Length: 210
Image (cartoon, rainbow, N blue to C red; front, side, top):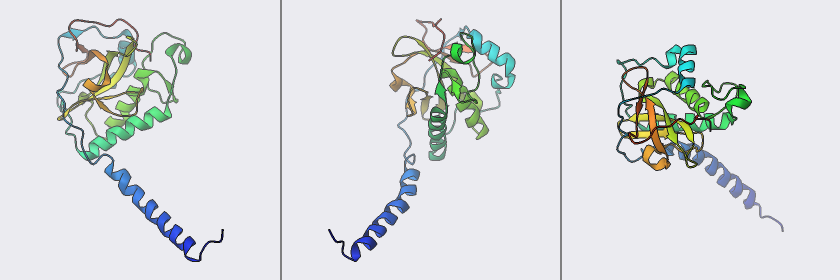
């Protein structure tokens, strides 16, 4: 079929308009903040995970609670965009492997800087990047849950003025904690170095290794 002389010009014009529209579409992706949710409530002290204790001995800065930092983050479109982009970037960069495959031990907490890690390694790297971007560590808590297979799993809970949201290596979307379908067990304390319960009727002894 022979194209008319106008066809190439029309195609070029349409392509240019689509390309120019792409950046604004990406910018609008996080323009609308998520609905507010009821934040998770904590209980009394909980037993720390032994691998977390070892991690704190190696990276003391990562476990110090600074009471001068805010307990919650003011969630603006820019902050929401940052949280989502860091969650997605780390999920894409890191390949999931067990600690036994990676380190030769059953459980080890560390940063997934070599592109390999299990659940807690993903979340520790996300928190480090978000802290470097200016978010307060006191509002970003490592959290242990029971997942859909009733197995121990680690996520990062972000506490905001619109409720608590979860960063997870099992999904790229950042969700309100109630929509994850996880059973929340315990998280890092915001008052001191340590952990607090999130579900008073249950405790988890399984290794967070997914």
